[in-house]
Image (tube, rainbow over all chains, first blue to last red; front, top):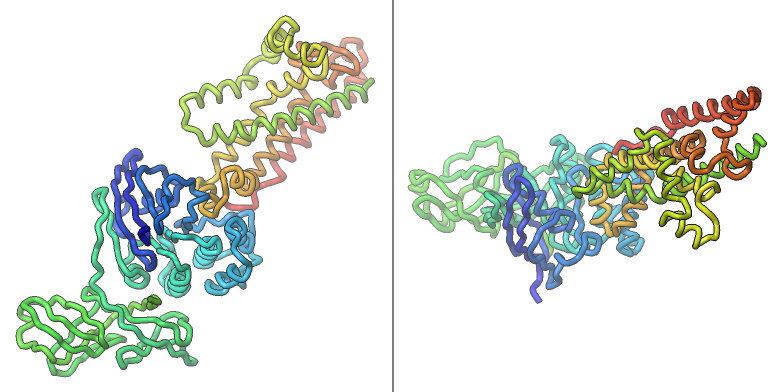
Length: 327
Length: 220
């Protein structure tokens, strides 16, 4: 019996002809990217059973495709939150929890994790966009899904709201204890939440390697907010991370600058991580950042003069934080 | 005599409304969600009483309900009574005559629900009927209220079909509108005035209720 999610689906509708297959691990977060209209949302809906599709879907050895949507145990967080307007926040959260038989303490844990306690007696139409997304996520998680699907969970929110909700989203996905698949157009979101990335293009799905390293750190809080102590550096965090939470810093070649040589390193980047070159090739170097290794593509000319063992640094203009998964 | 007619009309309207809501809820849900090729045909059949003269509908119902016809014969064997010229026949005729007033507001209300609501309910573990009861019906409550009120009011004021199918039997089939007709025929204008004014006021009140009360509080 194989663990994780496997599917091989054919989705045919007017204007849409998809043949999508993939295997996802039993835990962890996968980002689903692709152009608008490529079929990302259709794939999520087909997996959840609310869009007709043919082909097998297997989750931890169990076939899901013969089951109707309400018996699949697949949680889908819709792009527009889709809260029931005639029910209060508490009743919305209880809706799935009651049908799944989720014990009260577990529902309470979800409510606390997403910090929706203060909203519990409110009506959905009084919530802000960010609050509605948190409630929608709480409602889905309270139903104890075996597979969590999120359709652009941060779409339509302004950058400040996104920054606020992102840690909640990261914690919730991490605590769900099931594989999560989320649709996004935003590379930063993908880097901040996902361990791996799938791309849909031309009606097919492909595994897109995310050439990144996650440098684990430790959160400390003071009066000014939260900071991440990582690789001997202190990096201010833009959101309310909790003391001692296992956050890390995402390092990706396309989103950071390699600073080589022994000269002075002048940069206004808020995070500069010391690193060491462990190997040099014609158009790349492999660097070690606090024990994490990553290949760094460089122009041929830039690698000249670099040697194994040299110190270097990686400057992060826009630090991206990711919650480190428990293994 | 007047109160007999009023009581009969109220009883007929209440029974008709209950039956119509029970029949129209699944029919309207199906019409709002189906892509079946028969949908236009069913919609046209449902809307037919809106354009058909009541006498035409009443005439065919009279033929259908006669003891010699399959429906009338079946009813006679089942109950020992005829469908025509009694209360049961009035109920059947009223249900058909007021059907569009129940189906159309419900269909409009159901069609206006975001499809994602039912899908969200399904992914939260609600079976189709559970989702219908707990999500679709509360969200379409204004349509349900409108359908109930219009069915009641329309049945209360019907004349032609009732006269064709039920005749004019005091205490049995003589509803308010038939009583008014009889009163005018016998020059009892005071009785006609009282009943007509009563119908006018109640009809106006019903329309005020439909248009003014029960506005949707929720944005869906």
